[in-house]
Image 1 (tube, rainbow, N blue to C red):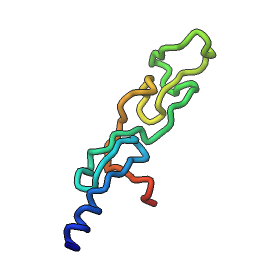
Image 2 (tube, helix red, strand yellow; image 1 turned 60 degrees about the vertical axis):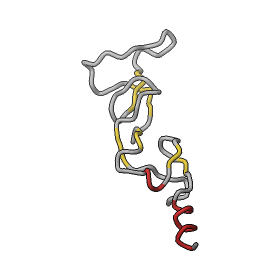
Image 3 (spheres, rainbow, N blue to C red; image 1 turned 180 degrees about the vertical axis):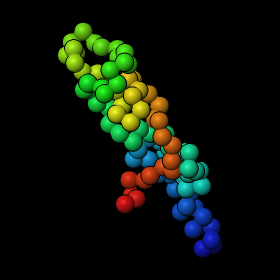
Image 4 (cartoon, rainbow, N blue to C red; image 1 turned 120 degrees about the vertical axis):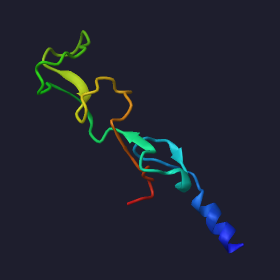
Length: 90
């Protein structure tokens, strides 16, 4: 019975602190978690050739995008994949 108890403990669902999805230890692979390793920022982008969709109340010098990949949609799929990370992990 000890083996079964340990197996059940391994299958406890956790919540990933990066992508907020539920996962189990056995389903956690190197491509399970999709996230942005940087922040969604509002500032002038170094790439002056790129067009950014601006809102009417945005300052003319600001653009909103993920600093890691340039995605302009705050709901954009992450640009990086890795293992899920639990809130319990340090």
